[in-house]
Length: 192
Image 1: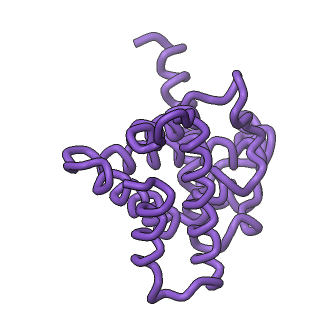
Image 2 (image 1 turned 180 degrees about the horizontal axis):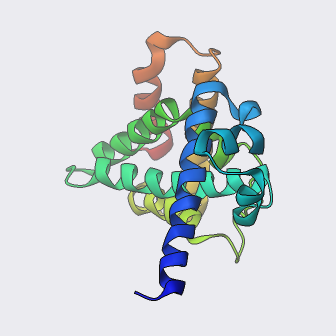
C-alpha cells in the first residue's frame, strides 16, 4: 500500500468519525449542540482537522443527510421486499418511513429539515437522495393510478408521510391514531 493510499484511508476514517460523532451528538442533544468545538473534543482532533474535512456545520449536516438517505432507502426496500400485494407493500413502506423518522430524529432533520447545502429535485441532486426517492417510487409507482405520473404521486405520498412524521414527533397528533392514520393514508391516497 502506498503512502497516498494509507493517507486517503486515514482521511476517510476521520471523516466517518466526524459524521458519526455529529450524528450521536445531534441525536443526544439536538443540532444546536453540534459545533466544531464540541466535535473536535469528542473525536480528539483539533478544530483545524475538522475544517480540513468540512467547511463548517452545514457541510457536516449534508454528510449526515446523505448517510441517512442511504439508510432510509435500505430500510424502505427491506420493509417492502417479499411483501405480497401492492396495498401491503405501500403500508409496509409507510410504516418503515415513519419508524425511521421516529428512531432517527436528528438524521431525519438533517435529510428533510435542515440546510445541508444539498440540491433536492435537481439534476445535481446527490445520488443517495435520488436513491431514497427511488426507493419510495419503486413501491408507489404500482399504485399511482392510470394517467398519474409516478414521480408526482410519490411526491404527494412522501409529503403526507413527512407531515405525519413531523406532526407526530412534535406531539400534535394523537398516539392512538398512529396505525389508523397509516391505514387511511394507504386506503385513500393509494386507493388499493
